[in-house]
Image 1 (cartoon, one colour):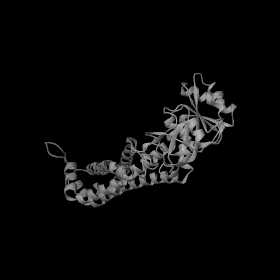
Image 2 (cartoon, helix red, strand yellow):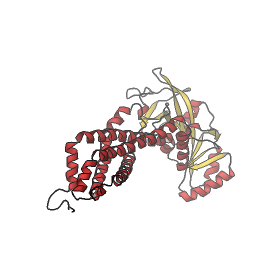
Image 3 (cartoon, helix red, strand yellow):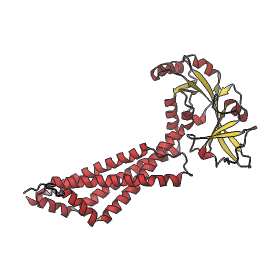
Image 4 (cartoon, one colour):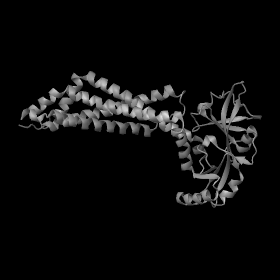
Length: 372
């Protein structure tokens, strides 16, 4: 005997079962969703930390928006440049018709505020910035740490150079523990006490297509083995790779993101497994009434999806609060739609694994065979 479901305006057995589950065993649902939601929140936020760490590692190159970066051979990251003659700029732009170049200077330096506060900063001097002389560009998240506010725009001395004003911006927040401050190249060179004949990097702006750049860059690297020429994309990726895999902090964040993802998936699988174990007798009853084992699989599929989607929705609601709490400690972390998408993918993976696991267990129980 078989029964058809959901006809004649009557709710289907799946609907009836889910309604009964929510009404009768709401504690199980609440505990499972709360546990999985917490795991999802941690996984999504940890992935946001990872993606933000990668983005922040190349914050200045991205902000300067050059097409090509030139550095000394062997330089692994933007923060650790090595002096090269500035004459390379004029020599290299000849390979790119219509191109121009900017000198870039990067160095750690002591920072003395008007209030007497002392700290360190990463000074970045660049040709052609859109700011007056003796002006610094600083990420707005660093204003308090540098003792700068709306009532005090007279900035400290860097070396023997006193700057007169500051411009707050976005996109320069960093995990280094010392903020980036961007200024005109000549002001930075004077403040750092270095000669203009040497630079940390040369940034080239050109209009060539990506394919043309690759060919020209290969030619330049072959002719000048003492320097490295990279596209902006490759330079940012090289810097991010250095911070992610060659430092303890980057490796820890990467491993934490992986572990958080695994924990979230395990929570989902565990929740569905507990559901199947707890309702085996109900499944036997359903099969005994003639609905077939396929209906049981449909029920477990619906439950798997519900237990996967609900935690992600719960995590999405909690993320703004999480960002608010951690903003002062991690100003460079920004939760993006990509991070929520990562959580959704994890939820689908968890639901898929959970349902496949439930499938195997139901076959193992041989529910239909009990009534043969």
